[in-house]
Length: 80
Image (cartoon, rainbow, N blue to C red; front, top):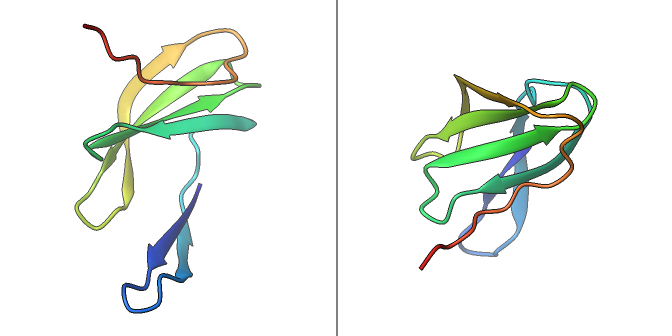
């Protein structure tokens, strides 16, 4: 997963680093609306990996994994 910084003065992005996706063939990812965690769907390793997000925008892999066959998309649903 590539992490970029946004330069406030120009709005341009600058590459910072990459973080391993925790599986094989990352197909999709999502960041929660509060920016506290990210989920990565790894299609060929049949898992969804949870990452915590730091205040600086870095991703820290957690121990939380969901095993599911060939995940291709993750979305946050708002229940009312």
